[in-house]
Length: 162
Image (cartoon, rainbow, N blue to C red):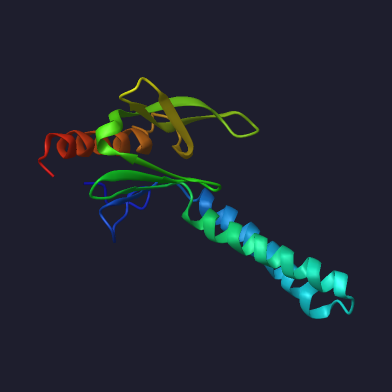
């Protein structure tokens, strides 16, 4: 059982997170929302108030989504993978295997180990928001540990062992 923050959550054994990036992302969106609220409160024109309100509302939604991004939740019947713009739900019966894949991530193309899920219909989906530094001299990648644990969980759930 993983007990560090990066991996299995210490407070909820069915939640897995990989790194601090969602916190930074949520902080940036929250800061922009505060700017929108300031514009809403201080701008005397109706256009400024509408712009400030829309900016605050939209970026508040993104801040909430960003705080929950990069997370995998193992429920009773499926894996739920949360990204910034979308939440993917994959029933255990549709998953063939869970693994890790090292690939370039982000605009700078840093090599990261990402969660990869192979489905029974032959598709492979790589979730780049759920990533960690790749395995190397410092040790095994957190994503590889999480992927092995999730693969074992999927196999148990499909076999009916819970």
